[in-house]
Length: 164
Image (cartoon, rainbow, N blue to C red; front, side, top):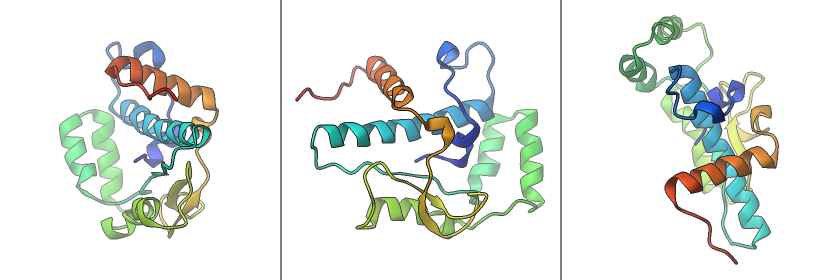
């Protein structure tokens, strides 16, 4: 499960845990970019190894849920508070939770879902619209970035893919 926040994100390998200078928005974007990269890498590995495994990735666009209010309360930064006020004005295109669940449901249950495909709202902004396969964000391009994030996660957790 990714997010539209991954679109402008990058992986901060120098300070992965944000110990030097924490930014809630950048950390969230990094985590959602990492989710996207992990899904893409798993799709690539499963295809290379001939596994009968389907790895799909999705994002809900801008879906109005309690994440905005509960997340803001938990994070408590000034920028977060400002963003929550903007979101409360209803000036951004948004969807309700049922519509926002469409891309995830498509990725998980559609018989036509493809390995390594990315699903989200089909619109110019990617914030709202019918669920569809959408282009992978430029921030996630390149198999070496995905492989690097995967290798870091494996080393950190001690969980490695089986050798074939």
